[in-house]
Image (cartoon, rainbow, N blue to C red; front, side):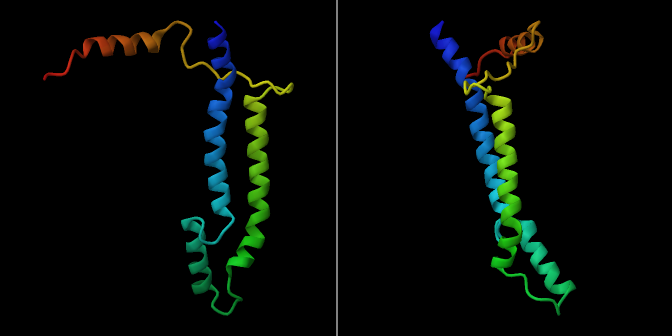
Length: 120
């Protein structure tokens, strides 16, 4: 019983951590000129469309995009904390994926049982 309670308590963190890593990687890539493909394409398009304008350097792009990236990271962190951590600091339990009537679980179990065994 104690083990099950602990598993449910930490389930929210087990979901929030990989989500936070993925969002942070995307937002961090947005902050640099070479971080994502669209940023590199933007650089090439600006050079072709506006040849007389000042060049978009790594530093100028980072100065523009870094504050947006930091703000986005803070927003994602707040959203993940709001969803998966209760105000008293205790981890909230993750949503259960089991339907109340067992419909999807029953259907999956029946399909698995009807599949048989592999030859050999």
